[in-house]
Structure formats: structure tokens, C-alpha cells
Image 1 (cartoon, helix red, strand yellow):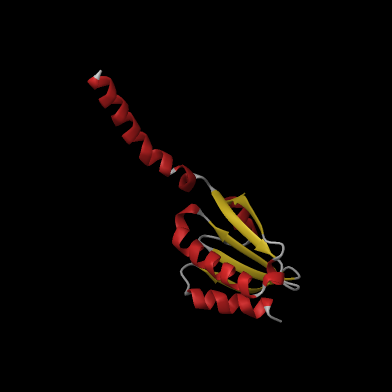
Image 2 (cartoon, one colour):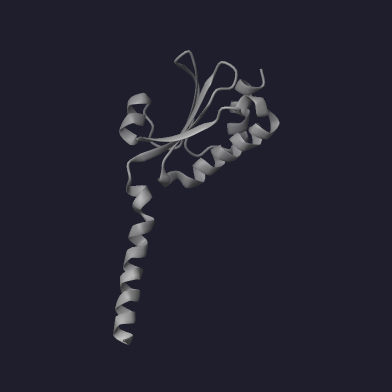
Length: 126
């Protein structure tokens, strides 16, 4: 009986690290989009960039509290890394602001939250 319990515990301990990596091994990118005024804002991030993604999301939440009407139609979804690469060389957390299909601002990677807020605020407060 003790041996069975030990075998089960070892099996569970072996599976835990693999189950935690399941999301990061996927070739999936999370996408958050919204349209303040006449702009399209898209945030692309994958599971490997949790810290950066959280900074960008915090900045969006902060601005949503300040400008609620600009964030009425926030949508979330997923796409493959290949789809994102075709759109615009996305390799890490990336915020793209575009108008009429043209990129007007872009932030990538590790950025200060205040820089993210200031960049977004230019396009939501007009």
C-alpha cells in the first residue's frame, strides 16, 4: 500500500512541471484590442512574457478608469505566433496603435508603465 502511494506521488511530481509548461509551449499569442476614437489598439503577448504583459494590462486598466468611453469595446482573443508574425514582426509583448491600417505608434518588450500610459493616453484623450 505504501509503495503504491509513493509511486503515485512520484508520478504526480513528474507531471506537475510538464503541465505548467503546456501554455508556454503552445505557439499561441494572446491579443487584446480596442478602438479609442479613430485608432486601432492591439496588444500582443505570449505566455513567456507574463511580467511585461501585466505592465501593459495595468496601463490599459488605469486608462480605462480615466477614460471609460474609449474602452467600451475591449476584445480579447488568441492567434498563432505565425499569424502574429505575418501581421507585424511580433516576438515579445508588443503594443501597436494604428489608424487606417498604418502604424502610428509601437511599444515592445520591457517598458516603464508610465511610458505605456503616456503613449496610450495620446490616442484616447483627444
